[in-house]
Image (cartoon, rainbow, N blue to C red):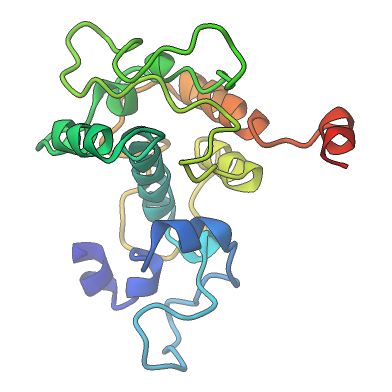
Length: 201
């Protein structure tokens, strides 16, 4: 919020809804030197590509947390997970080690551990592993957005915004190589293969 106010371009740092933001690539990012042609804080054409790289990283991690907490289960189960996630800190699977998330899991696998089954011993959130692919409750993070997360790890910012750029988000201390591998697996979750297309016919 601070950066949105300081820059005068809230559309680069805020979004109205995680699901609509991830579903919409959006138009070309706004030129910081030009005034907006509408009276809305967030343009109707906005999507994840119009967000500042720092906001894109935040959106990605917010979606991971939402999918960890709002996965399949009874309303009581979801409420309990939300309570565990209501902390001043982030879980170590987002900040230090994404291994416990195991995003490669699918519904048909035998090792269908429930929330908390793969968490690090010191984790108090008890949310891992990530919901298996082909699950119904979560919003899948599509391949183009995952590829963008990889690109952010290896490129310089093209944004003319007075923000210190870094290869990872400020709240993350995971090596770039490990984050790249994590987003590779996440991208593979939704890649359509010829076999999958035939099965859907």
